[in-house]
Amino acid sequence: MVAFLNSLPGATAQGIVWGIMAIGVFITYKILDVADLTVDGSFGTGGAVLVACMTSGVSLPVSMVLAFLAGCLAGLVTGVFHTQFGIPAILAGILTQLALYSINLRILGGANLTLSSRNYNLLITLGKISKSLVVLGIASVILIAILYWFFGTELGHSLRATGNNQSMARANGINTDIAKILGIVISNGIVALSGAFLSQWQGFADINMGKGAIVIGLAAVIIGEVLLGKLFKNFALKLVAVICGGIIYYVVITLVLRMGLNANDLKLLTALVVAIFLAVPYWRRNWQEKRIKPVKEVEENAAN
Amino acid sequence: MLQIKSVYKTFNAGTINEKKALNGLNLTLNEGDFVTVIGGNGAGKSTMLNMIAGVYPVDCGSIIIDGEDVTRLPEFKRAKFLGRVFQDPMMGTAADMMIEENMALASRRGMKRTLRWAINNKERDEFKKLLTMLGLGLENRLSTKVGLLSGGQRQALTLLMATMRKPKLLLLDEHTAALDPKTAATVLQISDKLIKEDNLTALMITHNMKDAIAYGNRLIMMNEGKIILDVSGEEKKRLTVDDLLAAFTKISGSEFVNDRALLTK
Image (cartoon, each protein chain N blue to C red):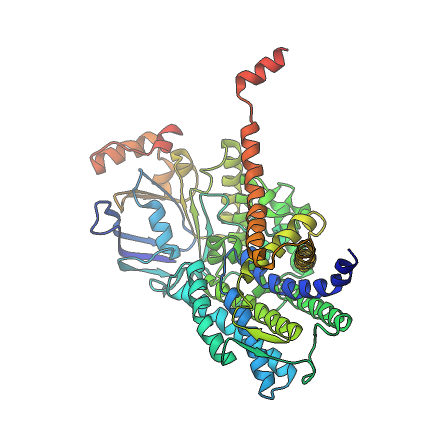
């Protein structure tokens, strides 16, 4: 128990990192209504670009910006595949993700690349948890503030309308292709930024760091929505709920690992949990339909 | 205001499901024309509106709105000329966005979307005034999600959104068909009022022949992708439903078949 409590701050920090990634997933999945699987690749791209840049002498802020832009570029490819090549969004994302595997290997120059916090001044690191928590907190607040502003602008509204009702969006003169591309670009930029944070936190980037990122992102989005959705109606608070979802996810993972779960089974568990969370609203609807009583029964009850 | 010149459109060409939806359609609307459109099942009424709006491209022919050839323009670019209300009340509004957000989107129809704030307080006051005109009590519910409104309320809102930036042409595609009779009558009256007040040019498809006669200054009847009857002015005012049915049988050589039209006759 004590060991678990001691590991809480670390789990929280990692949860925020994944929560930032989940905000990227939120933009595509919830706002644009597009399931974008690019993130499994672009998360790794963000980490790889950051480590590769810093180890070749680029400063930290510039490396972060480059990581963000690399993610945007990955999103641009998926967006163009989807809207200009007519490929279904899920498949477009899978194609980009596959291509990014090769690209990430190129960037890393191998399967992994280390970034020691002893040699570099990093924003966050496993060794300085409290400092990392502060930095991640500030980063989240800035990110949420920027997104809150953006989705309140005319352009942001055109993205929301596109995700809501494409006929309506086009009838009002919105180029829905551009709106979708822009949304996927922003989403993957944020995902890559999160990857850049994680590579600093763990002190390395490797080719598999983004594997299953989409599922973790969905988990965070759904956990946040289920647990805090009733409380948090405002858009900014919804994004806060996503970050909270990421934290809760990581705290729970830490707990089950402490309780003796084999770390190799983690992805299996995550997939199952997300599947169940996604199924619950569907089951609830079905149950409601089944509860509708046939007329005869209602009449009999009335007669009694 | 609108010129449609020999427009052809065939769906599923070369397959067993081939359907000639528009078959050399010609139509010219003058400014201020309020035209009601009737016709049997599959006559090409909705296809005509969708062609004007650019939902899908024409096979050949040209469409000119306000002197500009829009035949090759994508749907979103034609939006600056057009106000549209669909048959499905869900289609004209964004359900997860608030009433004021939907209106703000519509008030920028055909304009570049910038990084300026999407709604300002001055606009909110205007939206309130416009909503008050509807008489549905929506003026006090600016921040209600549109998804919570009834079909009739949504359709009335869509009408308002389609006309708040004066369109060169208003397209109404059986926009009261999915509503109950009482609500349909209300929405139709609102449509008429908005069209008259702003002196809009409008094309309204309806399945109700009485409405087609009662509203507008011109009536066209379509069959097999062409216009087979075009009546306006005094002649239109004297029309009866029986005249229309008789005219249809005479011109097309068959009985008028439109399930809903016959039911509401």
